[in-house]
Amino acid sequence: MNSNLALVRALRGPVMMMTLGGMLVADHFTRFGFGRTWPVLLIVLGIMKLLERTGVSSEPANPYTPMGGK
Amino acid sequence: MSRGSIIGPIILILVGGLFLANNVRPDLPALQIVADWWPFLLIAWGFIRFGEILVWHSQGKPLPTAGISGGEWFLAIVITLAGSALFVGRNFADRFPHDRITFRGLELFGEQFDFPLNATFKTGKTPRVQIENLRGNARVVGAETEEIKVTGRNSIRAFDRNAADRNNKLCNLEIVQQGDLILIRTNQDKATGEQRIESELEIIVPKGATVQGRGRFGDFDVSGITGNVDVDSDNAGVRVSDIAGGVRVDLRRSDHVRAVNVKGNVEIRGRGSDVELENIEGTVALNGSYGGEITFRRIAKPIRFESQNTNLRLEKLAGSIQMSHGELVAEDFTGPFTLRSNSKDVELRNFSGGADIQLDRGDLNVRPGRLPLAVMTLNTRAGNVELVLPEKSQFSLSAEVDKGEIDLNLPGQWRVEEEGKGQKVRGAVGTGPSITILSDRGELRIRHGAVETSTRTDVTFSDREGAPPAPKAPTPPEAPKKNLPVVEQ
Picture 1 (cartoon, chains in turn green, yellow):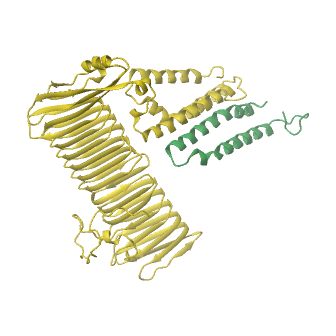
Picture 2 (cartoon, rainbow over the protein chains, first blue to last red):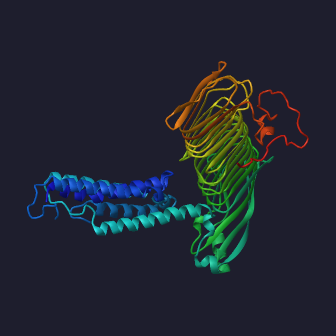
Picture 3 (cartoon, chains in turn cyan, purple):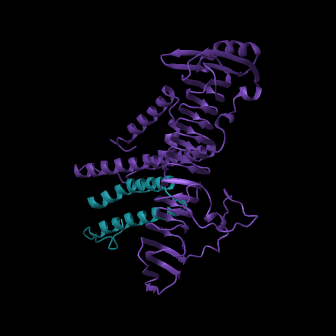
């Protein structure tokens, strides 16, 4: 596996954790409640997945999995 | 936890430190702090793990497949649920007297025994008196005397009379002098066993006394003294009246604070519900978080109010301000009136000295009602603005809404320009101060002179002290002259 891909994959959890924490802080201290901000989690997850795909596509193509599968 | 991670030890240290703080200093609001700030733990957790992974990556070490394991997510969810429960529980508890909710056996099966309290102590005319009463109410009255007289009762809730007697002897009321300080203390901390002791105190002090109150649960009621009043309590209602000195109140939780007829400055800090200040000749500084209604009436010097979401300043208040979580109504005051708030509907009537208002969300209804006008900046990111200017006022106007309309009803030639989904207008009537109105989204209504459509026109030009001389309109016989109740919109 590409080392950048491993890095992005490993960072996904911490980034999601920070996002969740940030949204809960917003819920406590601002008028943006968790009920309004939860889609941000989906967006961040999507971005991290997109970055992973970008990492995969930058790898040399594997002749046995031409679609970039694992 | 993942191998080599420092998260596990840090969480252990934090949990240990929290319990240690709770055991060593039970007076510290450790749980309250956790209830408020726990989400930052998740951010710190993510941040530390983020840093760890970057370090491992730079050192060429193998990285974990998942940056945060399933077990860690489970722990995070447990923390989130527990933290949310604490947060909600604390807000819930704020609405109820804290000490009355208990499920201990003593509350259910114990019996209350009352013991009379009585003590006197010779003092001068201006003693400094400190009342230490952990639990129970204290009422302090100033009188023409040179001694302190305390009466009242100890209420001890215990399973039997003997236990109550024993503790009543331990918790004897005493008045002692320490330097220039005279201590009135109920010694409830000396009680042993499963007891609930409350001391109700009626205290007569010399009129010139300075009074300090220290407690955990119970109200303080102080009246008729010429010295200062200083109350520091975990959970107290505070009422002070007819005080010639200043008043300082520091509370962790309070259902109400009321100060009436105070000649000195009033400073209130903490967390609570209702606050009512009336006839204050000094400055007023209110800091903290208050979930109920805040009322100011007739404050002769500047008012400062700061909370997490609202920052208010003004110079002098001849009328009143009523403020709740989502609404602020102020009438008959001298500015500059400065307000920063994230969400509030604001109504200002009959004022001079200008206004500078910035809201994240909320409607603004502004009727200066007095001439000459002063600089006004009215800014709401989402909300309507209605500005009603007195007849014959001179000003330059700049109004702009990014998404919405401007409804302008002023004499003279005005041209409202379309701009994208919004509108803007600029112009002037004579030479006067600038009025700037900005709204990202909403409707702006600006009218000249006509306050006749308001149901509150009868209070707009009140005859209260402090108002500039105004032509006195014939008063309808049924119209009340002052202190009209606020009419909700």
